Amino acid sequence: MSPVVDYYKPKYHAIRLGEVFYKVCAEQGYDKEFYIKNCNLPDNFQTWFSITQLHVWMLMVRLRPEPNGKEIIQQMVNFYFLDAEQRIKDAGVTSGKIVTSTVKDLVAGFHGGVMAYDEGMCKDDPVLAAALWRNLFTTVLSHKHGKEMAYMTRYVREQLSHLDKISSEDLQAGDLTFGKPKASL
Image (cartoon, rainbow, N blue to C red):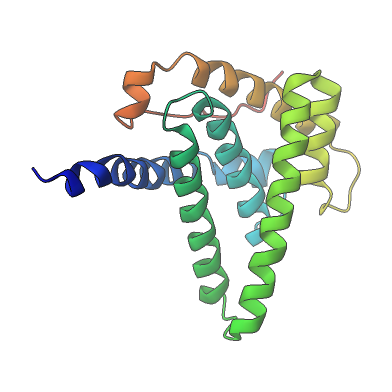
C-alpha cells in the first residue's frame, strides 16, 4: 500500500464512523411517539432538530476522550447539518439564501445548546433541566412540563452513563445504541 493511502485511512475511518453515529442519533434518538405523545412537543422540524441535537451532543461527550474523537465528532456534525439542510429543502424551501441563512441560525443554536448541555452535565440536575427547557420546551406554549423535564433529565443522565460504559474498541467498530426514553419516574 502506498503511503498516501495510509495517510488518508484515519480520515476515511472518521468519515465512516461520523456517518454511522449520526444515523444512530437520528434514527434511534428520535423516538417520535415519546417526544410528541409523552413530552407534548410539536411534531415539526424544530422538535426533530432539537432531539437529534441532544443525541449528537451525548455522543460528542463520549467521543471527546477518543484519540480520533475530534475528527469523528466533526464528521458526525457535518452529516447532521447536511441532513438538516436536506430536510429544509424537502419541506419546500427553494431559496438558497433562505436555506443558507436558516442553516447558519441552526449552527449558532447548536453551539449554544452544546455549551448549555455541557454545563448541565458538569453541574446538577436543575442546571441540566434548565438547558433542556431552553433547547426543547421553549417552543411549546404551555409551561406545565415539569414531569416531561424530569423524564428528559433522567434519560440524559442514563444515556451519558450508558455511553460511558461502551469500550473504545466497540465504539471504533461503530457498535453503539441509545436506550429508549421512558414516560415514568
